[in-house]
Image (cartoon, rainbow, N blue to C red; front, side):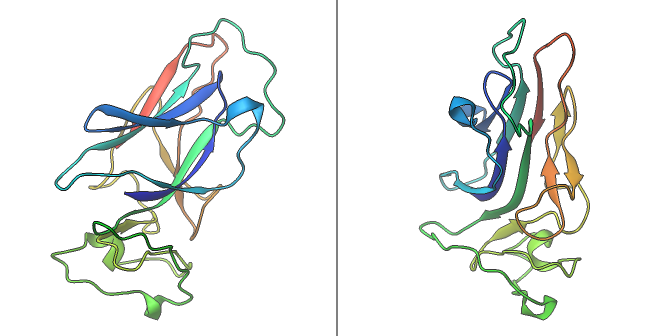
Length: 186
């Protein structure tokens, strides 16, 4: 699994954990009070077969009663864009396509709709040989491929993107009581 993530989170305020089939496989939080402002490509190794991959945004994950001052420029949100599955062993960097006619075509039995039927003219990075791709450019979320649940729901946004017009964004879970809250996207 390859995806672009802007993890604008900072401990102890919030973090992002990802799970594969219910097993914690890692977390993304900006260490040392620094602020992440750029999308980064993340790879999640998956064994063959079907898997459930969940990203969990957590507000006040350690249950503090008071926060220190936040770092300057803190985003306090996670953005995900350009999600793709590549064949085993493929490690190909995405390339930007400049026109709709340059989009690759795939047999419908090998690639779900997001890769084969783009609905925006915005250039979007699609890794060659991807067997699945979703850059959220159809302008719908959640849809048949995605779900969201928890104390707030992830949403489609144009606020920050890695490519194209759309990405998905974690909800604002901040609250005056500093009550720990979570939201998942699967």
